[in-house]
Structure formats: structure tokens, C-alpha cells
Amino acid sequence: MTDAPETQTANPDNQPAISLASFRQALQEGRHEQVEEMLDKGLAPGVDFGGGVTPLHIAVQEGQAAVVALLLNRGADCNAVTIAGWTPLHTVALTGNAEIARLLLAQGAALDRTNVQGHTPIDLAKAHNRQEVLAVFKKADKKPWQFWK
Image 1 (cartoon, rainbow, N blue to C red):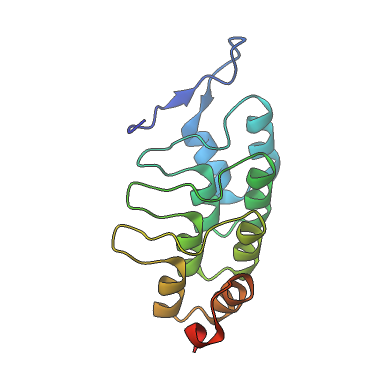
Image 2 (cartoon, one colour; image 1 turned 120 degrees about the horizontal axis):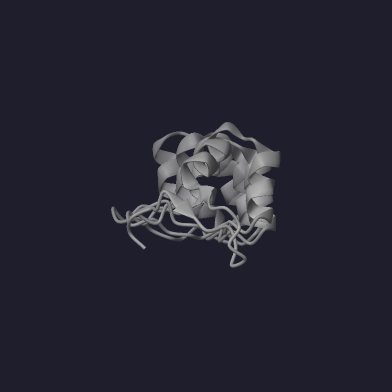
């Protein structure tokens, strides 16, 4: 799916459609209860907002750790990839949120995925001097200590 629809049917029982714009706003603003309610009504935690951007990408970008945890608990793919090759870990490498990095890594997020420019989350965290995130990555990674010097 390349274009995000304005609404998605909540469930097959012809419940009212949920506005993806409202869902996106709730994700951005960290409105945990509203996000949970929308998921309970059948909105998929991996819905594509366009270009492969998922609710998890949005919550990570906005630093909404509680919403990230909710989405992961509801089955969101921690390795979802946008058309630019960005995973949620690529985003956290830029935003510098170590708490969210830990949440993603605990669910199996891959540190070795490259985006279309060939950069891993580790590369981005190094380039943007995200030391706290790098420490989380280092603890989770299995590379030899020389790699991290």
C-alpha cells in the first residue's frame, strides 16, 4: 500500500471507520488511552501511513515511550521498514531516546539493518553523537569490543 487512506475500517462488523489522521495525532501527542481504544476497535498496529511509515515509526519519532510499548505489546513490527529503508531503530538513533532504544531492542529490533544510504542505526547514532543510545546499542550488540572504539 503506497498511499495512506484517510480512514480504515475498524473491523469487519462494519463499525465506524477510524480516521488515520486522528490516529496519527494521538500517536504524536502520546495519547496512550486513545491509541489503545483505536487498537481495541480493530485498527492494526502496523497500518501503513504511506511510504512504509507505521504507527511505531511515528511514536518513536515523537519520543512517546508509553505508546511505543503499547504498540509493541500489540504486535507492531519492531523491524518495520520505510521505503527509505528506515526502521524504528534508525529513528531512535537520531532522536537519542535511550528508553525507546531499550524497548525496541528487547523486542528483537535489528541493529544491522541498513537504510537506502547504507547506514545502520549504529552509524547514525555515531554520526549524531548519541552517546546514551550508543551505550544501549553496545550493550545489546554482539560485535567485538574493537568495533566500538
